[in-house]
Length: 86
Image 1 (cartoon, helix red, strand yellow):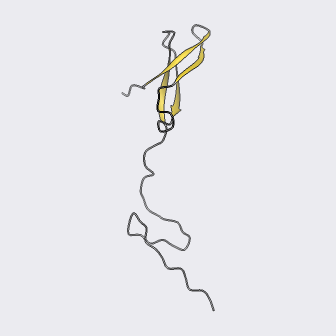
Image 2: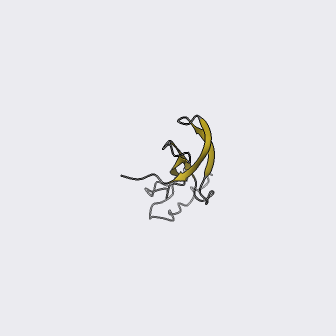
Image 3: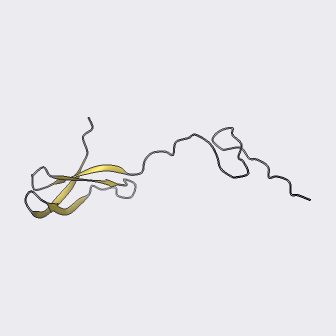
């Protein structure tokens, strides 16, 4: 008296069947990347910058951090700017 195999249910995004290992083998992308790369530019006017990532869903405002600028050898304010592409 073996139990009957579980009924296979179709994937909600395509016509593939779900196996007993419960792994979908769909080739759909995972969606948009959550983090974006931003540039933190020194307010001292030296042109020095840091790059970092931020999640725009959690941090909606522009970042402004106090970090070290090695050109003026002081901690100064760094403001968020976009990275130029190309």
